[in-house]
Length: 263
Image (cartoon, rainbow, N blue to C red; front, side):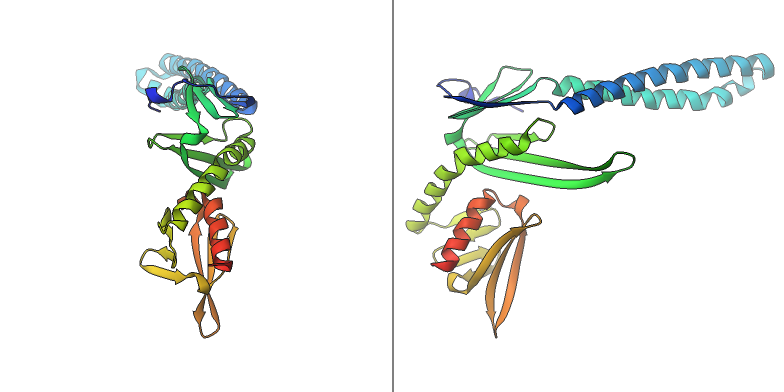
């Protein structure tokens, strides 16, 4: 991630709140995979050499590769696993995120970079679950922050307590952003939330628009923001957008719910 000199410590961050580093179980997993991979590669090389020697002694050089090649291939695969795991550990072991009353610091080997809460413009979160053979169900969570200067910070659940970190960021940033959005809306300015735009007249989504007096409700469920509206003839239609496409999705949800009830 490029370091913007303007984000280096220049003012007090205030009271310390929390610290987040590489998860212990991931650190241990990388170490085990590194040791098993490189150790297994050494064993495969030894067996390959021994098999090649036996083939040479008993049958001559013609069968050396046939007898030893599978073990060389296995050694190469295990070595890649071991080296890749240790390289990932080397990349991530220095990750450290600290939160404070006025901002946060992010460190990854280099000097800590400071991000003040007042500079955060958008918050996006994303979560997914998947199944891995032998390891069972696993998941990935992500937090993406965009600053006023368009610099971004992406954090995943390789760090400890990502859920707590997300809640801290939202508690420190959302009240200010909500106030800014309300002021802009009252001045008649359209408010963009990714593909959704809120205006004095209603909601715009691409070429479609929905008046506030037609909006019947909204909900966030299973990673999607849904808006219900009266499409006429006593029918209710639904607009559903993935939450990962909507920055500051909770604020968008609150505004739609309020404006839909009291346009």
